[in-house]
Length: 397
Image (cartoon, rainbow, N blue to C red; front, side, top):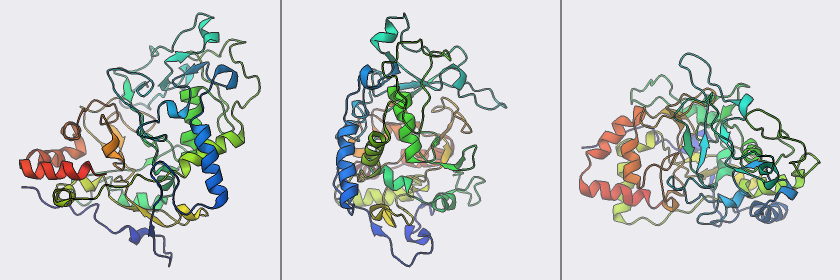
């Protein structure tokens, strides 16, 4: 029989930073903007939707090394801003390969000197004409490499607006409360807290987006002017058809970023009796210890993001998930450490876990190890009816 876990059940209003204004529930249109945008912000979102769905060519900055021809080439399901088909057997645009070098006791090598951790699987005709094909996994990389599915981006602006103190309040790296969960923040080299990416390797949504343009599309932008290299070798002259840098203007980037920044979180389906029972079981067996249901944003000059309660089901912390899920290091996080994946929008997923290896939610839970072992074992001990109720709840998210 499962027992209740206390962590993850606190009220998000307790962390509103001392403001006298009570937080309000975030809302908006699914696949559309957050509620409460100003006219200018709505116009930026609308313009950004077009930029997000734009198909780039070598003449407009694509490549020469790239994984996708535009944002929506991967972030497309069920609407622009969503995830991808994410079928590891296909390993197409929606599934990419990451590689680093891990040596126990030494600092993780992100392989920046030989092209970085993201492996680009496509090249432009101009680069192919020089006899250069898709980027191979560097021989310096530690095997196995990592597969990464395409996450959906709904509600990412809200995650960006969660104050650091909200994340720090959830951290328990030494497991002081003895619940077996020892989530820790990912402190970047400059001291900031990471929150985006499967290893919490990016501190802000802006950096997440600037990196995506360069690493996924080979498009330099005002936030990141560095072109990708071929195993550390600069690109040959004449293969980059856009002479001016950056290849994406500030206005174009601001529009694309604005679209992601202002995307509303996905709505939840109404719960029937089984789903409501499953919500109780979700907390009771310990899922909410890491997949914290509610977070609250801090004060923001953007009213639509200011002091908003939303339901991401994450603590944005790193957790040891055990050897079965381990793949690569990335900066400070070890191969077995991953940021808690938000569960908002889970019902739209077709595969599960960071690499898409699980075909069902139940299979994904069975793969959980490390800090999640106790919760996984409680799940395995559920009766058929209890398991049905829990999965019913999860499919409502």
